[in-house]
Length: 65
Image (cartoon, rainbow, N blue to C red):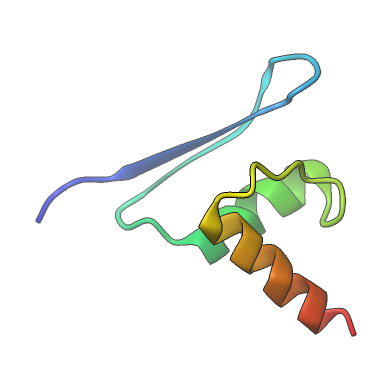
């Protein structure tokens, strides 16, 4: 099995690329830690309600209690 995952963070307001990462295997925790948290902060990330991001926000909410 070969391949890589490219993830690009685009600012929703200006349309500019904020961060970019390439990894051998898709890892949502790494994507969130190295891209979204660094670029936008932990609470200001817009969510499209895909299953993986909803799950991560649920875990984040549990950790903040």
